[in-house]
Amino acid sequence: MIEKKVLILMGSPRKAGNTAILSEHLARGAQNAGANAQTLFLQALDINPCTGCNQCQGEDAAGCVVEDAMQEIYPKLREADSIVFASPIYWFSVSAQLKAVIDRMYAVGGGDKNVLKGKSFGVLLAYADSDPYTSGAVNALRMFEDIADYLGATLVGAVYGSAWEAGEIRDNEDLLKEAFRLGQKLALQPVSHEL
Ligand SMILES: Cc1cc2nc3c(=O)[nH]c(=O)nc-3n(C[C@H](O)[C@H](O)[C@H](O)COP(=O)(O)O)c2cc1C
Image (cartoon, rainbow, N blue to C red; front, side, top):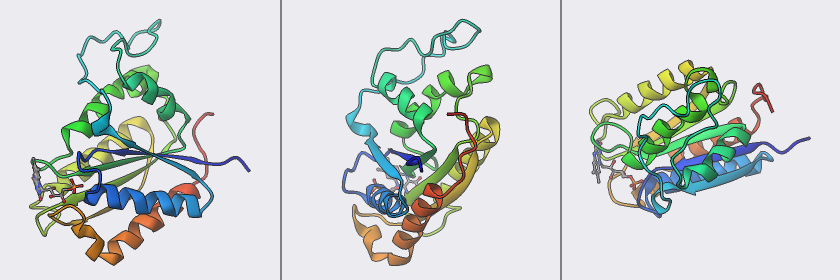
């Protein structure tokens, strides 16, 4: 059997923070179910915002023209069976680190260029407020629903919970188990995208 690839886009600048811990548990779950899981710590990568030049669109376009770390991420997005969007809630939405990658996905997901169709998506979110509505997590969840719908991807699951200090999320054992289970579930999803 071909090993499934789970790519985790980890959008918190805190390497040992709550989103990182959720990502770690999801990765363990995916590995436990036989998949290969790779986590990208976006903060450490040189990823610029989309310039809106539209050179990635059009029939003869050869991808994004901005030369930065996204050029190494595009092949990973293409090869992944599952993509996990992991972020702290910043100002009622995802972090700028993750949003920059999402915007730059335009080159492989916008218009006719969609290579993300049929992939499985997962979402991990951490926020300080006790409530997914007042924290703004609900806005991020809605955004991922729309993105998956637009791309023809399947949003397999979302794991989200409250924590403030880096590492505090470890106290929520049920949530960590949920992240682990989402990893397993992603690893076991049938492949419905083109290889
Ligand atoms: C710039 C900034 C903006 C934030 N905005 C929100 C917010 O809108 N809603 C919320 O509930 N928590 C907010 N928080 C709190 C973080 O989401 C929370 O501390 C989270 O656990 C951080 O995750 P991390 O440890 O993975 O970085 C914000 C924190 C920062 C630094």
